[in-house]
Image (cartoon, rainbow, N blue to C red):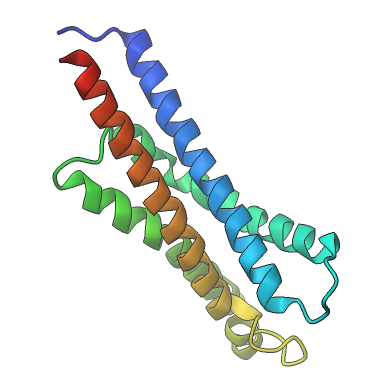
Length: 161
C-alpha cells in the first residue's frame, strides 16, 4: 500500500496536535493539583492558579519543542518504540532543566540559590524542585500521549482490515 506525502503530513500533524493536547491537559491537571496543595485559605482564587499555569507553560512549551523530533520520527507506540517515547518524554524536561542549572552555575551563579532556591521562598523553589515538577508533568503528558497514540494506531489498523 502506497501512502502519499499528504497522508504522511496529516499523520505527523495529528501526532503533533495529540502531543500538544496531552501537554496542555497535563499542565492543567498539574496546575489544579499543585494549586490545591498550596492553597492555604478555603476560598477559591484564580490568581495563584493562573500564575502556576503561566509559569509551568513557560518551561513546558520550550521542552515540548525539544521533544517534537521524537513525535515526528516515531509514528506509533508499538514494540520497542514505546520505551523510547516514554523515556525520552519523561526525562527531557528534568535533563534540560538540569543543564540550564549547570549553565547558570558555570556562569558564576550562587549554587545554593540555583539548585535549592531562595531560602525565603522555601523548598518549592530552585532547579531541584523544578526538575521534580518537570518529571511529574513530563511523565503524565507522555503517558497520555502514548495511550492516545496506541488507541489511534489500533483504531486505524482495525479500520484498514
